[in-house]
Amino acid sequence: MPTTARDIAYSDGDTPLAGLLVGDDDETAGPRPGILLVHGGGGLDAHARGQAERYAALGYDVFACDMYGPIPPGDGRRAMLMALRDNPDTLVRRAQAGLTVLADEGNVDGRFGAVGFCFGGMTVITLARAGVDLRGVVSMHGSFKTPRPAQTGAVKASVLACHGAIDPHVPMSDVVAFVDEMQNAGADSQINVYGDAMHGFTHADAAPGGMPGVAYHERTDRRSFAAATAFFSEAFAG
Image 1 (spheres, one colour):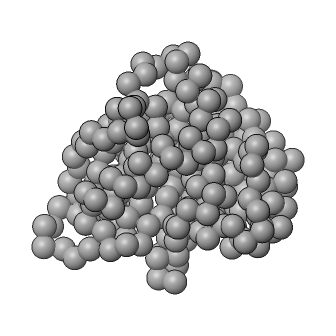
Image 2: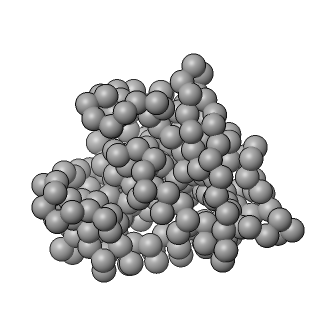
């Protein structure tokens, strides 16, 4: 499906942010579900923008949000990532600023989901843990540790987590703990574990050996996207 994209400036309190809204380029098309897309540790980069186009082509309006603001690449972004990770309230508020843009600027019908990659995967799971009213969230090679596990009955969104079996940054013990957490919370959850895949398996532009433990894995990228496609189709229909 042909799509159009436009950059949107917005803010979270005093923090200026800049995201990308991608949707159907047919102005006569009716409202549709909206997906918040949350970038990885590199910020709103080419990977995040490409993924926004990929999910918009499924027929959704997609807003690729900005979780960092005007912080240049390097140690500043790493510090911001860690600060957001360790403060779920701030993390949720920053992501909800993006959901507000999607609701106000997108051609959406009130049904919302979220997908995130690496840091973004952790972010969308945090939204689910916080009880944000989403139909479903998808974590792609995200982390699962949290200072605030989900409480019983709190998770409204269905949850899909796609994980690489040999991801050295997110060990299987974290996956098992997350399975137990979702079960104890009574969440509708699915966890897919893909053999031979490491961290960052959706990053087609990842330089081999460029970052230890991070590698593109075409088969897992393809299969996890198919799983996310089916997941959102079911979540938005329910």
